[in-house]
Image 1 (cartoon, rainbow, N blue to C red):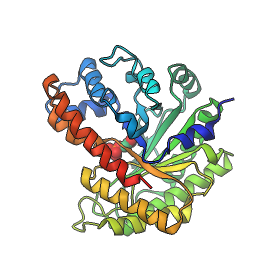
Image 2: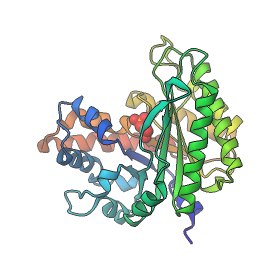
Image 3: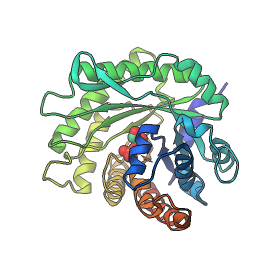
Image 4: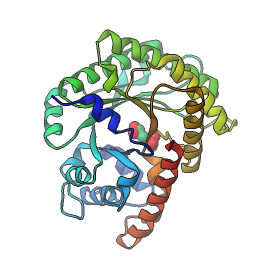
Length: 331
Ligand code: 13P
């Protein structure tokens, strides 16, 4: 039998974290378009290879989350991406939700879909080398009303159903709670929403008897909204983020990784370092690390521009950011 707890724990090797390279075709197209790159399947393959094919990433990465399309693609080394990652000691993971749809009970909110046919897809992903999975629930803050308790509860149920299916298939689940930074909200409102989201999620996970010891939480930090004038110091962000986690996340969890959520790369690095420092001071019970997409990729993409001659400079920028983010989570 697969030792899911051991796999989950191995993703928290000291100084290592997870690269989120699992943008859907739609998100990857938007991301590349911002740099004037037309997203054909071949350009998306080159985009993945820019990061997954970079030398020495295994020094900083314990895992990489892929999108379904990438599982069928090969790097410039002519090996399937998942195989070359495994060979370098980086665990391949896979995003298994199918994106969001409007929530019927509350028209302005989104709910994550993808439970129908999930067991069959999991079987296929496992055969293709995936050892862990991710499901992202998204929560938009609007005043004191949104997210609604109904949307929070429905997302919690779907996350728990997903986690249960994934463990039954012999894979590790990452449950992602992406409380968006977009909005005018205060940091304390962001913390309050995180607390509500964690409260609902861990109560439903317990109800569904999901084994917590092999579950990884991937979460946003408690931060002031992007349209709020207030700029949080790393210490402020750390204080509220950790308070929300310590109050609501069971100690048995395998660990917690953070998403970057649209923060500038330097800010995502400094906030993470402050969170890890404070967690050590407070004796937090779980290992903490990163699972960034944008904060790890943006500087490299700006240099790459889809051109082969820019690959070395872009990879150098990626490795530099990776080294700094790794230092932020190093004991
Ligand atoms: P960001 O780090 O860009 O927020 O992405 C992480 C992620 O996986 C979002 O689902």
